[in-house]
Length: 113
Image 1 (tube, rainbow, N blue to C red):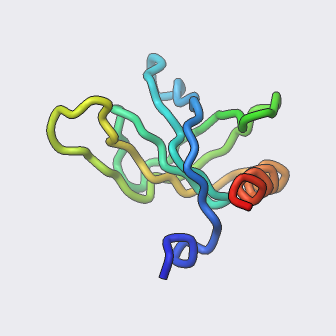
Image 2: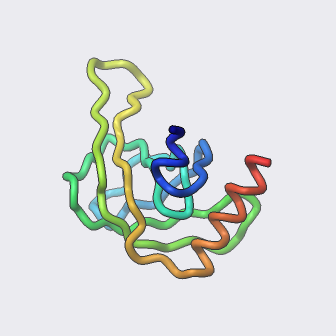
């Protein structure tokens, strides 16, 4: 069974800047993959499972930001001191407009076909 089958929605590997500045001074974070249900965010600022977070990002070719709330579903900590460090958090969207969800779904679909 593929990851997409288990998660219920198609995912796309991407590299987008993401604004998590609501958690203190801005730190470098990248949205590394996305689906209409959630995303993986590569960041040094790991949050605990269950933590609610706010996200803001822009899909390629779009001017309008997507703003959403999500919950940390899992955490990955890369061992060692390898650079760039791939540590990050898996976030499940909990509060996202239907329009934003459809924009993500359309972006993923068009990028994978």
